[in-house]
Image 1 (cartoon, rainbow, N blue to C red):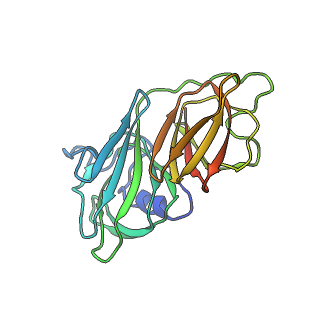
Image 2: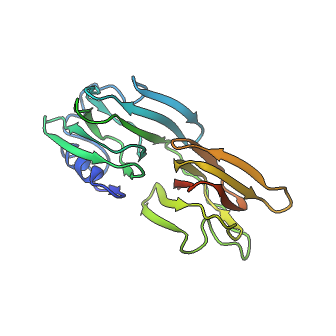
Length: 239
């Protein structure tokens, strides 16, 4: 596995080492085995599906373990709780890893593992998005309108051939109008209320909560701000 990245904790490096020699194409040494897909499964609730991805709200209870499974899509995740968990590779190697609320990651299809929760750890909770095998279009920005975020307002977590991921906290003051040139999933880490303004239309108020997922189609120009709370999210631009 060559394309891995992590934000704020060592989760991905640990999982990458435990995929037991997976190649860039996601094939592992046991690729001939019949294994269940990652989803659907107990503890995973589908909350959104469209042409670009399938979104799962996933919990792992203390003392539980998934079956050995293989992820059939490239996928991204956003952690929503602080805890520790174990990942078990096909060769039996086990590693304990930390999860931190707001941590975001990307893994390639073919990832094969068991996920275990120690009995003395807090439950793990994450949003996981399976990325469908389609290219997402990019739209031309209107002249003079900056792309997705005004400069200096968001931190880029990673960029690869499938996604660009940003850690963004909405400011209390209205931002300059900016343009979503790509389709995006937004996973909210902190909730609150957002006010969005589109030219020629009255402002709209949106209440969001931690773990809520919003899909925004590309080709939209708007200004927005946090009207209540420290609203933070992981924004996943699709390629």
